[in-house]
Length: 460
Ligand SMILES: *[C@@H]1O[C@H](CO)[C@@H](O)[C@H](O)[C@H]1NC(C)=O
Image (tube, rainbow, N blue to C red):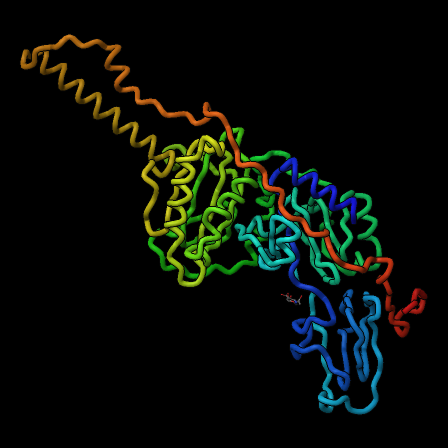
């Protein structure tokens, strides 16, 4: 544990990239009432039933009374220290005559379902529920993310995909963090590993962290179809719904687009926006997702020609909020006044109300504007020439050089300003987990002896 937290601290200090922790939400814990068909943990007079054909790894935190228990063909209990079952005969007080309670099926829960993950910047944030909003593609773990399955928890996840593997930086299971490929593939071949991960693709650990301070592309666009297949989009009422890159649905709200220089640091900027704006009461219900995306470029808005990296800030209003556009303005204003210190060269936004920042909304707009400007200029010059030729106008002596200089407005290039980034604020890492359990303490296999008498590791 000590080693892990030192490592984390180190990563944090060097500000290595913008990796997030992505935590799988569902569990297959005995104590979670959502896992039972009666939406309650079975009580002492109940008959507990695990569907015979379902493979499952169940984490048990404490001691439970049951009347009878029917076990699956293949499965395990992971018993916390002190946990166990005892059989009661007769009625338990406050429990009634007892019913048959079935453990729900967790077979269909897919890795690529964005609703089943939550993201946070640090483990501490994960534990305290300070979760981040992301576009759908990035709700699912990105290549350089740390994947967390809750400590004191078991689970079952379907990792099927069209790719042969699902690369990630690390995976934590039951409080143990796997950071090397060999270690994790070894875990996957254990009984617990096989019960927890199933499906056509293998999760592989050991992808390097994102080494680019301005962020890395998530890498999930290859799985876009599969990810969006699990998403149902809301019907929208806004005037011009927006399509964020990496999202499955159109949204109402605002999108801030940021172009950056070599000095930009995504993690620092995320913290800045959080401290400056998201803490404010008026922005309480805002959902904000910030990431580096590859924005498709189109000439004149039609002809595609490659992609450019940019920072996309998606801002959505929560319940009945109307602040998304105001926040977009605040962010653009902040970027324009402090851009040179932040490594931001350009910032603009589009809102679903039809509003946008005053700079032309898109490259297409800039090009169209420039073309029209040139046409007007040419016709003016043409008219002038005609008038001069016909003698209507006396030609003043014009210094072409002067004219050139006055037309050349030029742009301030903030890249030339000295960078003075906000210092990296080392986030507060709690101990990676306060779990007192580990595989060795709790890996108690409960193999149903009725079905499988080859297995003899029945050491509960
Ligand atoms: C129980 O499971 C649900 C759904 O999978 C999850 O949202 C919830 O956090 C779990 N409860 C606890 C206490 O972990």
